[in-house]
Amino acid sequence: MAARRISDILRAMSHIFEPAPSGRAKCRGCGRRIELGELRFGERTPNPYAEGETTLWFHPLCAAYKRPEPLLETLGRAKENLPAPEALESAARSSSAHRRLPRIDGAERAPSGQAKCRSCHEPITRGAWRIRLVFYEQGRFSPAGFVHLTCRTAYFESSDILDPLLHFSPDLNDEERRELVGACTVDADPAPPLRQ
Ligand SMILES: [Zn+2]
Ligand SMILES: [Zn+2]
Image (cartoon, rainbow, N blue to C red):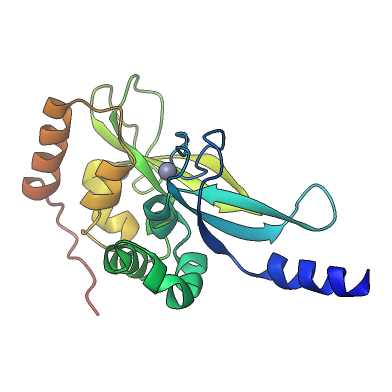
């Protein structure tokens, strides 16, 4: 009994990579299903509703962008079993370098003019590109408003956000994706990016 408990505790402390044993779990990062047999990342975290721990499941790249620290902790010992550890590591390193980058939840054209930008506090006009934000707290991601696409450098303190922006915008069609890429490359706002 005691031995079992210790092994439970040891197992509970480590985040893991593993092939999904079913196709039922949804990724916490993007909300889409993780297919049977697809590699997934499990972040162990204290259960906010009960004693013990719970596991948050992610597509590895979704975790690299939204939960870079736990992913990086795990990457070192899991590297040889992963198909593309370098891509995960570079995504996670860039996301963890600026504290607000893990909040990126994709881009969209504002369907109304009601929301205000969290960066400049001006309304986001209908049809303008905006970036969705989420806050992570105690095992949950909650919607946290929007920023103008043009306010991205001021808000994120980095202009290098296109990869996570596209990654978390799977509902955009090809033409919208091209527009977004164009807006991100041409339409740079005046605040200079902070460089290390
Ligand atoms: Zn995902
Ligand atoms: Zn703004």
